[in-house]
Amino acid sequence: MAQQTCHVLTSWNDDISSLAAVTPGRLTNAASLVARRTIVVDYMRAIYDRTAQLSPSFKALGARYHDVPGASGVEEALAKEFDHTTKALAGAVPIAQTMPTDSESSFDAVKAKIQDIISNAGGNGMQLSDLHISSVGDTAAVFKALQTDPACAPIFG
Image (cartoon, rainbow, N blue to C red):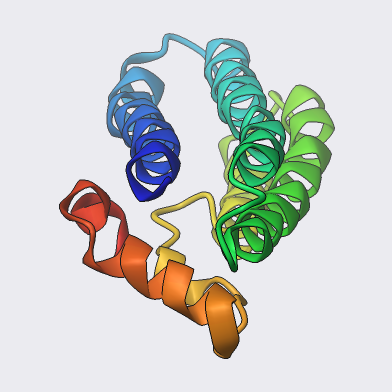
């Protein structure tokens, strides 16, 4: 279970990191504010779409490992956290779509607002140690197993 959970998370983290790595260069090289807005909208849609896939994945894993004590608690906590993240990112997409293209300063102000939404949503290098997972009983044991599994090393900070 730990390897499957970590695979889902590391895959998501790698996808988001890749998007975050190329987007600044694309913004710098864009010919106009309209082109920059399109890049931001595409980026927001991509991280929203990728993040929206996580909660159902965790719910499925929780159901699959229902017989492992504490497993469903960890998967439910992960699903809940990523439901929150998905909702926050969903709110950023329409903001990106309406970014002003008449002045650099107005564009940058809205871009900063979107960056705050991403950071607050956990989409900017969220560490699993930040998640609110029960620290008692079987759930704590499963979470500890995730933390110590080598497959999870890239996602625990």
